[in-house]
Image (cartoon, rainbow, N blue to C red):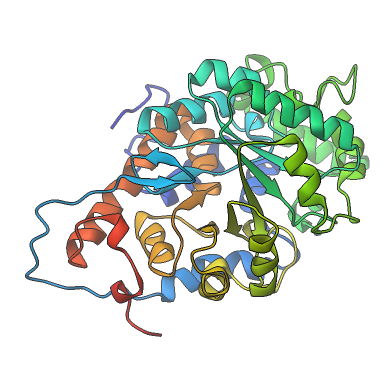
Length: 391
């Protein structure tokens, strides 16, 4: 385990929760709440965590578990463990060139990193610095020619998987962002509060605002020439989410993407069947971390029905509420082939950069190893519903 000399607390973090607290102390309030917050009253975000906590593991003893294996294959790619660093927008605002740091940590650990369309660091920068081509997450946007260009860039960079995110035809109301003037143009006392919030975090200013430049959406620079900050891109991004997207658009994506194709944002069994029929390679059961439509099911609650609906036609992955390797194990027992984490690595990179992300990955790896041993299993490929008590 690695520790930086500039750690905010005098104790070593032992969990994702510890990194969340470190991130809270280090980041301006508006930045922390952007990571930590959800849509509306945040019920779905809470349930993502709460429903996983209610899943009970079946402890089994007197099994030979002297050998425990976490390596697996996902979408044709070998992984050292069934974990993927999922796409997180604006990550480069949390730590200096954060997408690069996280991608390096993922590469060192033998797992994929998913580059967000709205990352601060561009796709090419991440691929070159990390030495491993990232997966690429794409929103279906109105400007189809620009989206085609992004897919071409991902192909050129060697990205093996395209993660098509489909749960943003409209954007859910995130009240914390409104209160913190993270969205809109701050004015009056809101602007003053925002300015004071930034000024009271000099370490963040030095690391990110000064040394972390350019603070622009690297993948979108060609779309908004002359833009100098993420705020300059906001109106373009908001206008580009396309509410007219249908299943017929999958054929358009296939015309421009020859690699593996995964749809992110599936919660409904019928949607999962449509996805399988459309010819994609996989789906990610996700409610966008509870950041879109509140009061939809948690990923843990929706997962089993999706798995039943598609059978062995396509691979099913999941995200949402994952804070421990036990959560990863539980989602796999509910049917996921692998699990994406988002907030977990965002907290870690905000708190301690690449070293923090590496530590979180090792926390998860250790938890999964413990869960294997105490449920009597030798490999993550053996995980199924028998590892759980029926609820």
